[in-house]
Image 1 (cartoon, rainbow, N blue to C red):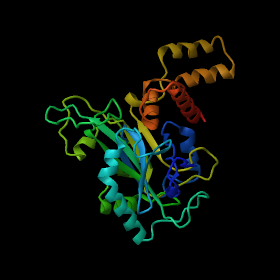
Image 2 (image 1 turned 60 degrees about the vertical axis):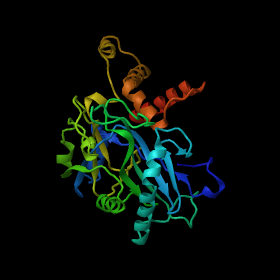
Image 3 (image 1 turned 30 degrees about the vertical axis):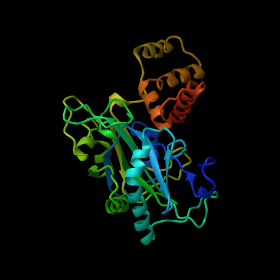
Image 4 (image 1 turned 45 degrees about the vertical axis):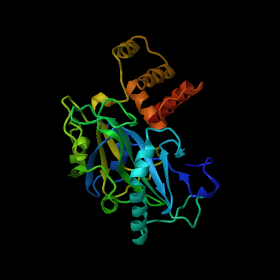
Length: 329
């Protein structure tokens, strides 16, 4: 968490709390920890579609609304996938959300040391997406920015919420949905609700539901979802000292995995059985599995489009390295 040093002097309420990482269901060690702490069967689990976009958040103190990418706060004139459009569209809804939550005592005083005590601040986390929809009956939207490739959701830049931070923690699922409904903010509708085992076995291979939610006709070609998110209806955390403390999981389809082992690398792995190498060689081969187009595209979505700057390439490489280290941690 870092304070926004570039914000105006009257904006010292503006702190940056990036959204946490979400583990995949393939991380069996993490799921075992959840089981050991009896966290998998204490409440219902909800399955929602995972949008292939850019992690994005709105922060408001009831008077002003600020925006942030996963990595940093955004200035209103900054280039980041046309976010100004969704800010303008949902500003009043966000202020209304703050009023509703405040009237019901749902906003907590922040326990962050760099927060201003007299300010009550909420953060709405979600996904920024859209910019292209190749249907003959749907007109392109001028100045829309394509956020991601591989899935088409809508011609305009759009936003859907998936979590609300109340100043101290995330709202429980049913309370969050009630707040989003009342403030008329768009959110990811549940695909399924039931036990953890049922959610865990949900098939992520399906056509994206987002265009239908937005009232668009289906595309004349395959338009698969990126995957699904599995979330308990209660906000649960583990006690073990691990990188991710919140209990939330994701399942990505094979088309959008960020971990790819090519046949050449598999051949090298097979060679190790005959000519074993040291642990650093093995780790190096493991890292290479994370260097692929999907990983690159997702890094760009978090940090914004590549601009013409001499050191931009080095920044992208650094971001990919940081993500690889998090994955194998």
